[in-house]
Every structure is written in C-alpha cells, then in structure tokens.
Image 1 (cartoon, rainbow, N blue to C red):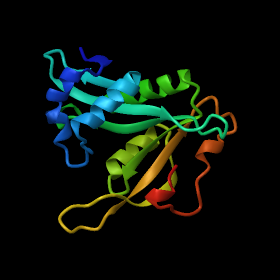
Image 2: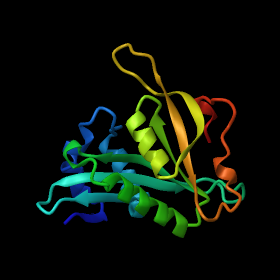
Image 3: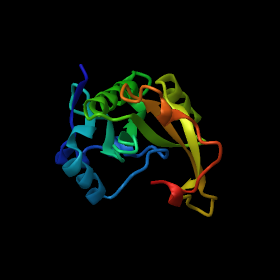
Image 4: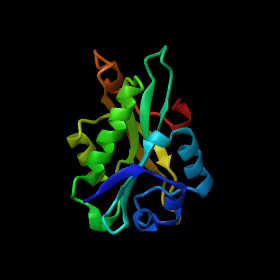
Length: 178
C-alpha cells in the first residue's frame, strides 16, 4: 500500500528516480531545504511498500490576503515513470488543495510548460484552467528557444465569485509576475 507522508531531509538522497524525467524541474539542495523549512506541510512524498519513492509534491502559501491573492502554489509535482497512471499526481494535488483550503487560500496555481500537453490535460481534468500565458518562462538549453508556460489555477471555496480564475486576455512576461 502506498504511504503519503511528509518529505524529510533524507528523501533528498532518495528521489533521483523521480527527478530524472526531462520535464521535471530540478533544483539545488538549498532550494528544497528552504521549502522544507518554510512550508513543510506543502512538501509530501508518496512511498511504495518497499520504501522506493514514487512521487512528490512541493509547494507553498503566498500572496496578499487584502487583494484576495492569498493562495497555494505548486512548485513541483513529479511521479516516477514506473508509477504513473495510478492516480498519484491527482492524490498529491488533492492534498495540497486541502492544505490551501485550511490556510484560507483563494486558489491554487501552478506553472506548466505549454508543450507538456499530458500535464496540461491532467490539470484540466483536476479542475484547473489556464489563467494566463507567461512568455519564455522556462529557460532552454542547447541553444533552443526559451519556452512559454501556462499559469493554471483552480479556485477554492473562499473565492465564491471565482474571480481568481478569470483568464487574462494577454500574455505576460516572467518579470510581470508578482
């Protein structure tokens, strides 16, 4: 049976099988530790019965309550290839949404590569919609052009009028994101 539990420092030495996916953004150890220290409840791992890590979600709470922008943010969600299509990503997203609800968030947002249609479709099935396109959000390598991202959002119960998910009519640049 799969165990969903809090991510620990030791997991940083055990999650390479998940992060080897080319569509998974990987970060330096200090970045993961910052999330673990500041938002531990938003850092959850799925573990197989044999102890192998199957996937994880890393996020945070951010924004302004006064401007109705307080929200949960998904920084990273990844499932190892051999554990995909089991509903793990959906379950991890559900947990992050529940935490964001308890913290009084208006919505949950995430960024995803425009070319990653498998992920875009999965998020749409989970109730997310494209709020805006962010031009050249993802840096490319090997001389390829930078890639655009979708900023996808799902309104939570605090956003009664669903104002947080009204799509912007024009794309934005990364420096325009608050």
